[in-house]
Length: 381
Image (cartoon, rainbow, N blue to C red; front, side):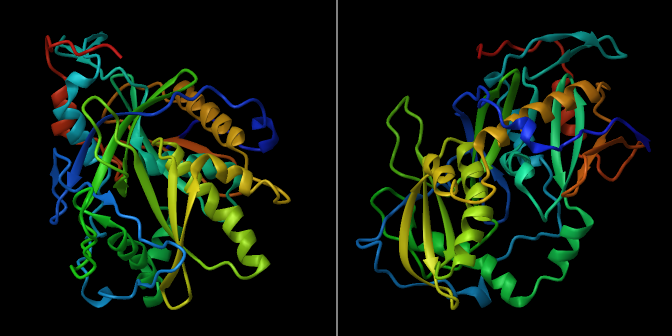
């Protein structure tokens, strides 16, 4: 493996400048994942938020159904496959035109006119990096037809934590899925169905386009529910659901503001979600009240911390990190993978991996679909 230059993360004060330009995310498409985790080009799995009559006095038992729920097979890495399937089926959404470079067979390269493609969760992790103190990350990047495809992989530490997750930790992961059952339905005027088994294979994903300074971005992210039906020509408005322990001590208040709120904010802000509904539960998994947060208010809630996280720091770091990727990864080849790794307190290391690396993630069915002649032009951005 050959090492490229490192990205010097610290001091984080260098990112504490004016908030960079970030264009409001616009949904350019969506897809569902069915009960078998098969990708479906429809909004079939989208749900609607059904708020309770009295959000300050509820009794949602998140433990119900835990022993029988249908689990997604986490042993199979999903990589970027479903997002790539959506892109392959929606090339007309992008400006599709012959590139300047040529393949060995003299066929023109066909790009998707986007600098970066990834899942929303990867960007969330990057935004939180300047304030992260305990959890690192590992990202594989391939530059193909001048688009940087980014895919997250588990670090050894994260893989070990998943492997050794206790029964209680596993059940608490389930609680978030169960909470969604209590506050969603299949139609805007429907009734929540809390008796069906939770199936974590199912999901609904929004695909958005945005821009951070000079970087154009397309990313997909699972969204929990729509607030109401959208009229023709309108964008759907989504809501995010979270659960959290009832805050009773100063330590819990600090942990909530310091570690949870930044993730909630980054995750929702990236896809333009304006509201986060949190179910506050006791230690036995019973939600007693709901509270709705405005996403843009979360940084102000956390500003009284001794070392508060700041949105401008998060986005300035992301902007500079993406610029580093553009300067460092110059090989434009779908078979070449770069691995970027980071642990708190360290700089970010970037290395070019040998051929046939286990971190290769762009499938042939996708790369071949973009290597075609004379494609039909798509609409301009």
